[in-house]
Amino acid sequence: MKPRVSVIVPVYNEGEAILRCLERILREMLLPAEVLIVHDMPEDTTVAYVEQVARTDPRVRAVLNTYGRGPANAIRFGIDAAAAPVVVVTMADGCDDPRQIDELARLVDRGVVVAAASRYMPGGQQVGGPRIKRMMSRWAGRSLYTLARVGTRDATNSFKAYDTDFVRRVGIESRTGFEIGLELTAKATRLRLPVAEIPTIWLDRPLGESHFDLGRFLPGYLRWYLFAYGRRLSPAQLAGRAGPAAVPARPRDSTEFEKTA
Image (tube, rainbow, N blue to C red):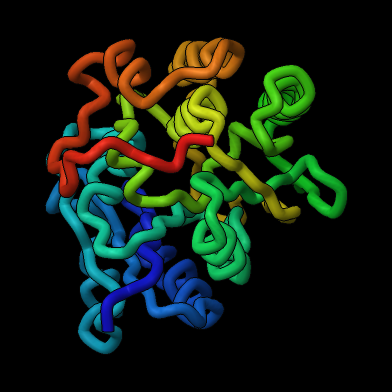
């Protein structure tokens, strides 16, 4: 059966800890799905454990990212390799609630191009995490929601579902960190395409060490934060502004995206 949702999980030496992540995802998802565990190098300690699960569950496969190292490239590669019309990006560290994957995917089925799991809307919560990171993320989310009208109070959260065709048409320019969620939310906003959110409870990583580097990733976040403020763009204008970097590596359809409002 063709999957209705592709779950993209970027990893870096998660080792045996990936088993708990996969067990929760596979237990909670009800929609026909594939789970792509995207790694940067064949020797990544995650791979052997993923292959162990894949032998008994065909939904799961390890995918070697060839676009360059880092989470942004891993997510780009995973989305390009996805077989489903909806992709959901989630982390391997247990911070995201896998019970919400189906709910986010169904929002995209209903017509939004970005569906965000929001820590900052009523009913949402963030538990733990570095204080400065929490403060900056909350401020960015509130200001973007109020002033740029991006459709979610948590534009910086990586736990989002996307219309796969939308992502491939607008392209992903990020190459460094986890700012892809903000980039695609900002692009949807400038194209005046629908963005929606559901409340989520985010829990700080229970095991292992976070790979988030605020100093390294901050310029990318700032770039897309500022980009969200601006006049409406057409798909052609967006493509012209971005240049070749925004063109997907393996486009599957060359027709112009027609969901503009």
